[in-house]
Amino acid sequence: MADAHAKPQHDYHLVDPSPWPFLGSVGALVTAIGGVCYMQYLKGGDFPIFGFNIANPWLFFIGLLIVLYTMYAWWSDTIKEAHEGHHTRVVSLHLRYGMIMFIASEVMFFVAWFWAFFDASLFPGEAQQYARAAFTGGVWPPKGLEVLDPFHLPLYNTVILLLSGTTVTWAHHALLHGDRKGLINGLVLTVGLGMLFTMVQAYEYMHAPFGFRDSIYGATFFMATGFHGFHVIIGTIFLLVCLVRAMKGDFTPKHHFGFEAAAWYWHFVDVVWLFLFASIYVWASSGAVIEGH
Image (cartoon, rainbow, N blue to C red; front, side, top):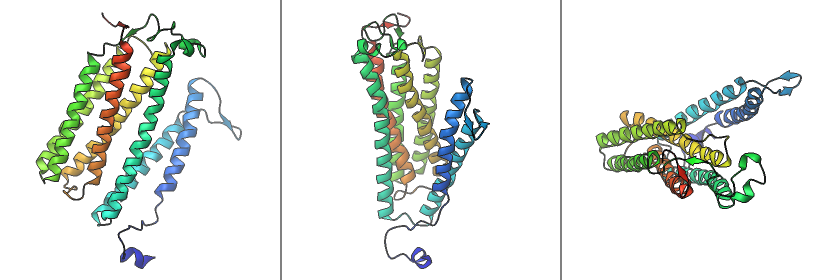
């Protein structure tokens, strides 16, 4: 086995024994249990296990720290393996397959929120049969509800994300042509636009004329747009890491999967936002009372 690792006669990479899959699984389990404990703590309930009440917020954050540390350490090992020349053509291809499958799973994640939104909006009379909070008055948006102006801050954020898609493509193009300065400048602009999007959405949330608990409209709106905003934050961090690596000279025109994965993820975030803007902001506000109008 040691000889197979030292002198491989194939294009595959035999990964050294690693603690990260096990530690990541432990962290995910602790985070899941800790999340339940945290919710019980917030509502003043108990979560007894073996005679101990573990309804507190600390277990969740401990699990989260384990997961974050595992992500950092595991990806650091992956970058180290790339520098050592283990990412052959076949390995790089399979890394791309893995990223494609991950994005596909994210697509299905958002399908669930779009499904919930369209189920409630296309059949508003049926939605209110299941919960008092889902009262709609038989119309969508629910009767008496003011909605956000889609051609104000939402349109502004749409322009921001479209611009960020352009700048990350510029960075990718510069990388392929060995233009390190263009790569760094493109990433700086993309990270800045990502942060600007998050700030605008936070401002929009703080001034929204409806709340999460007010109606099924608010619930579906904040779940869909909120999870998208969370993905924007993750994507911004992803690109920020790529910026630091680009400044260190990690990427080359032939070996830059880390940046390519970040760019794919960012374009995915862009496309999801276009669907959100068209359906939840524009279509759903048709005929509704617009805030401030």
